[in-house]
Amino acid sequence: MAKRHNYKNLNIWKLGLEIAFEVSDVIKKFPSLERFALSDQMNRCSISIPSNIAEGSAGSQKSFKHFINVSIGSSFELITQLLIAKHRLYLTEKEFQELETKIEHFQRMASAFQNQL
Image (cartoon, rainbow, N blue to C red):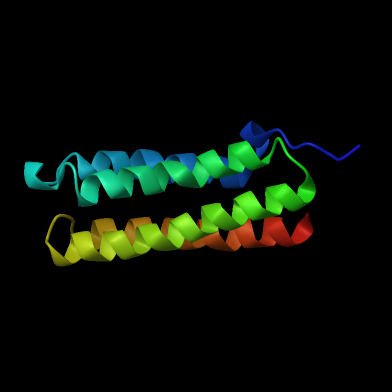
């Protein structure tokens, strides 16, 4: 029988959840005109990161690798959205840098974990 991972014990899931919480806090400051545009997209994207890890942990190793890949893809999408938000002056350079650093750390960790499966 395939080994199942308890996603709540995975550091990549914990970091993904932290990223989702921080993005949620950042988008609260966005103008209301972005409520159903960029901020909604960023919210869904950031939630996708830990959610795909949790969902994938219930399946086979091959399936889990796929879900981690989707999670990593969402993290790259999120950096793009953060760049757009920074360009629109919805977040500061410091806020952007802190989130980008955390997301890039997640990407390295998730890739290493995926390679170990």
